[in-house]
Length: 122
Image 1 (spheres, rainbow, N blue to C red):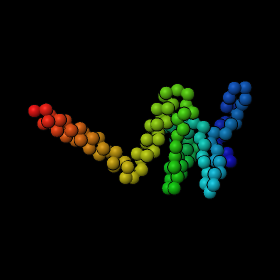
Image 2 (cartoon, rainbow, N blue to C red):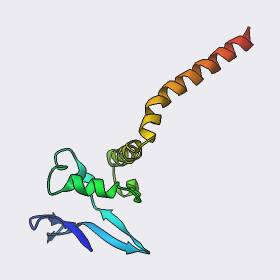
Image 3 (cartoon, rainbow, N blue to C red):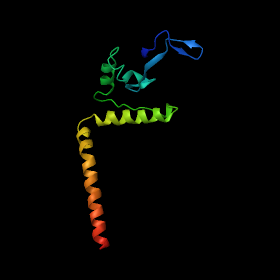
Image 4 (cartoon, one colour):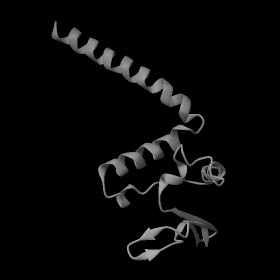
């Protein structure tokens, strides 16, 4: 089922649009949502055509959001996909609080390990 498509002015090779941009594929009792590009979630596009509402629905209760970075052909796309996935996980409660505290815990652990090592050298 096609959820969203490009405009009729889109071009891919020798073909013109519209092309499916977001589709839902039924799997078992649910759906797998395939999004052709994360561009619909960019800052400049998030307030267009209910994109923000769509993203909220994707990240709602009982759903999992995964970005397939292997489809990207460049390192920048891979990094963006990992950052978006990390943001999706970091935005959930209580993980967002844990992430804030984690650098402090790591710093304390490193300092304690260094202190123990210095004590053993003397």
